[in-house]
Image 1: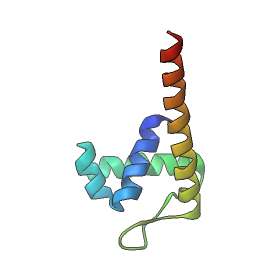
Image 2 (image 1 turned 45 degrees about the vertical axis):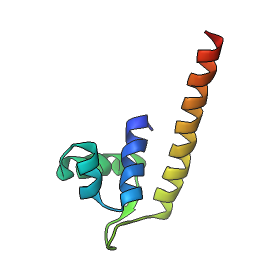
Image 3 (image 1 turned 30 degrees about the vertical axis):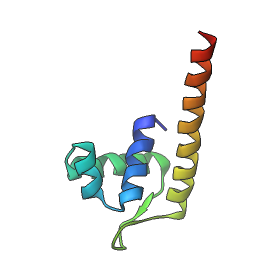
Image 4 (image 1 turned 180 degrees about the vertical axis):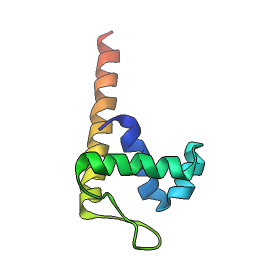
Length: 86
């Protein structure tokens, strides 16, 4: 999971819309959709349930978000700790 992947998935989950997230990210909606589909292919499962309006997270998506938030927090903690050491 890269920080960018986590941020993109978090934004789509927060806004519950690919098109709204794409606007905020200044990318096209098809590009964002392909990006998320590639993440889902890598994971072997869907993150979003696209059959609902608005979209919702699948159980795997909820887990991805939880782990992603932990990863972002740990990365930020590492940066802060490194800055203190320097």
